Length: 392
Ligand SMILES: C[S@@+](CC[C@H](N)C(=O)[O-])C[C@H]1O[C@@H](n2cnc3c(N)ncnc32)[C@H](O)[C@@H]1O
Image 1 (tube, rainbow, N blue to C red):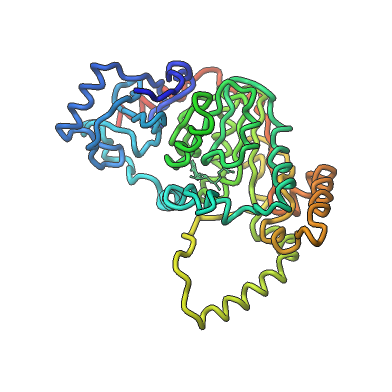
Image 2: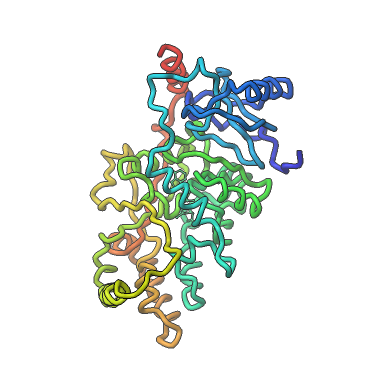
């Protein structure tokens, strides 16, 4: 097997079973062949209930020996609903309906559209949601690099929560002096492509960032860019809490969020653009519809008042990633109108007044630091979880 992964032994100590929270270990060849016999006999099931029909080349198991996780093309599949087990361990009382519909839709969107490339070799995600014009390149790059200023410059593990394929090269700079970058995402396609970029300096986990298969206090820095608002509205806080949980003491986490339509500044600036779009839509309804519309993607932006310390259990500082939205940039910023200089001025303003820009602008950046007193004394709760499961 030429998977060119770092041996999983190098980082197994920080992983945990997404169902029980237990330690994980890799199956030895005899155990693997016993597992494949179960597959042949149709006796192995996904936790969500469907039957497993594909043989394994490598797999992990939870230390209780009840759950198995596939390693496929160097990617570890650590989603609860895709854990494998025998019929006797399928807990009939628990809701095993798989990923909630909104999550499944986001996963399908990225596997089938967002992380495929256009004819120009650009990810559909960037093509749809980013300003890729040369006039904006410097500003987009500088804002992406701004994230790095908040992170520990080096360490063992940088977690990229919902990494996608690490679509912009400057993202790689965050983890340049780290031993490993952990890329965690629901999209297998994204992680395969991330692996092409990072090779054996990456750890690739298909996992849900609202239920991270990582032990508490193990990560030196965590970033999550442009994702939390694609998570079901009731689970957005859970995702940020998970980021906080896995951080080492005094390590920093960054979340780039969007206020969506709640950014009054961008609403105001986008008004002419919206009017033109509405008019175009009216004209279009009287004409035949274009084929190949972009599929829908879940989006929910909470107001600023939602992310309180009480709700989160820790403090977050408000800063800014980018003041202006992509439609506003595309509408006002043009080379022939001094667009580059305009964006440079915006960037300087963001640097001078980060909190104000984070409040009124489109994309705030939340910054939080793990408090030493919030570290668990040891991983006791994980053992309790396992106990609950066996008692059921
Ligand atoms: C807009 S993309 C952002 C990707 C990357 N952070 C960036 O800025 O280029 C959102 C990503 O979040 C992933 N995602 C959404 N919900 C997730 C979840 N609950 N757990 C893990 N990944 C998730 C999607 O699969 C997708 O790759």
